[in-house]
Every structure is written in structure tokens, then in C-alpha cells.
Image (cartoon, rainbow, N blue to C red; front, side, top):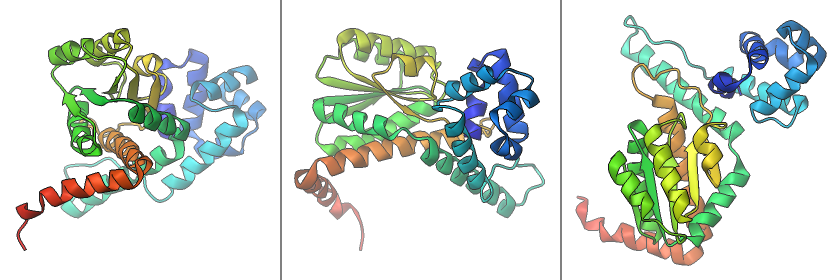
Length: 277
């Protein structure tokens, strides 16, 4: 929840940002505060606190407090600590691994399971799937292609923005487009999604809640992970995106039953001779 508040801060109103700042600075006391107390500490009205809760995806103040409490509990064990040039390899490894674990816990707590079910249904109803992503999300798209092509339908990833637009314009109602972007504000993938929507193809986005990309998608698999390590590379968001697509792929495989298991076994046996004893 703390990561979700951080990532949502840019789209909150000024009054809602005051509530966000208060919660991020004092998460433990915010869990214990009544709505009246949190409003007073933030210098806003009680309706503003309610609007803040809804803006970050909560049903209300009670739901917000429950999610915040779970978020704090997960941070007790794993949290991000800034790396420095003085860190030993042991310290560096611990910090980055702890950060990755924390991001997975945040993802587990805020993932929309109804959206996962709808995404599985969209895949099962399609005849082929295409993945679009740029930069680090392009690598995630290519990784997804390696997972999904074994599930029995043509799957391809496009990372070049020109090819993305051309491919998206050639989709149809029997195809499925999965568009990946951490910010949900990448111009190239937004334009590709717009073209895909014009063809009538269903579109799944893998992005932050409240982003332009999410608002355009038929289903959004939300990845609300605060990326505090992007000065080096987008570590946590990349892992979260891959995990969401792993969940979708495994869900599709389980939905396919015995016939899907047999297909996956054939793919595995086909490359068995490529390994030494």
C-alpha cells in the first residue's frame, strides 16, 4: 500500500497529496488514527480523506486501514535500503534481494484477482496473442513470448515502436494484445494500444492503476510497485511485471487441463536432447 500511495502521488489532488504525505511519513500512527484524526493531522476535511482512499483503489477508509496494516507488516521483514559505494558485496546483495522480496509481497497484497480471471478468459477466447513493450518493459514482453508460445496459440512480442503500430493496426477481434508499461504513460505503447482498440481486439494492460494505459484497456493487471531503484535499472517493476504475466500463463495452463499439460510435455521433450547427462 505504501508503494501504491507513492506511485499514485502524481495524480492526486493537492489536498489528497497532503493525506498521502501524512501517511507516508507516519504509517504506523495512520493505521491507528480515526478518519477525523487523520483529516486533522493532514490539514484537510474528512471527505478529502475518503476521496484519497478511493483514489488509491480502496473501497473506503476501513479498507484503506486494513491494506495499510498489511503493508506495514510486510515491511517489518523486508524493505528497501539505499545502496552505497561503501557497501560490501554481501551488503549489496542483501539490500537488493530484500527489496525484491518486498516488492513481491506488495504485489501479492494489492493484485486484482478478478482482473486475473478476466484476463485468463480473454486469452482462452483468442486465437493469438501479441505483446507490446518498450525499453525495460520490452524485455518483459519478450520474456512473456517465451512463456506463452508453448500454450498452443501463436505468440509474438514487438518492441520496436514502428513495428508495434503496424502490427497493432492488423489485429482483429480474434487476437489479444497485451501492452506492458510500468508508468502507463509511454507514448509509443499508448499509440499502439489506440490502434489495437480500433481493430476491435481485446487489450490487456500491465501497468499502474490510474494510468492512461489502464483507462484504455479492457482489463488491467495492476503493478503498483514503487520503483526506488531505477537510477540503476528498473529492478522491482520488472520483476513485478514478469510475475503478473507468470501468474497469467500458469492460470491459462491450468485452465487447459490435461490437453494443455500434454502440449507442455511435448514442448519439454522436444528439447530434451539439448542437455548433457
